[in-house]
Every structure is written in C-alpha cells, then in structure tokens.
Image 1 (tube, rainbow, N blue to C red):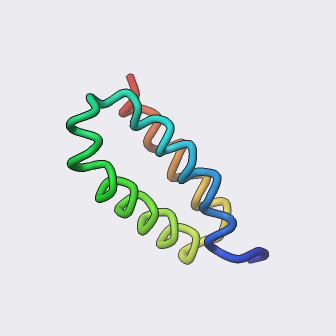
Image 2: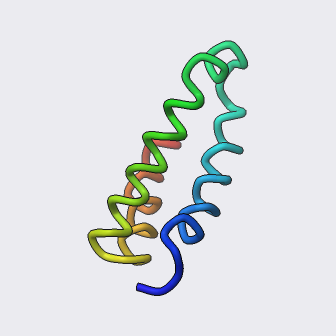
Length: 67
C-alpha cells in the first residue's frame, strides 16, 4: 500500500461531506460530524483490509443506497 492512509481517504471523505448537503441543515448540524467520523473509520478499516481496491469497493457496494 502506498501513501499515507489519511491522504488516501481524504478525497472520499470530502466527497462524502459534500453529499451531506442533501440532508436538512438541522440534521447535518446535529449528526454530520458523527456521520463523517463513522465514514472516515470505515474507509480506514477497508483500506487496512485490502488497500485502495477495498476502499473503491466500499463506494461501489454503497451506490445502491443512493437510488
């Protein structure tokens, strides 16, 4: 695995934060930080299990939740 885990997960985290705009502001203010932390932890876990391929797999597996 190349690169620092924080650097590798920063782009997906920024995208995730941007997607949170879909939630009402009151909800984002109350739950947003915890949601981002949970997502960050999940990304690091997947990265540790199998590198960047697992991290990409996380996004692919969760695309169904958007529809």
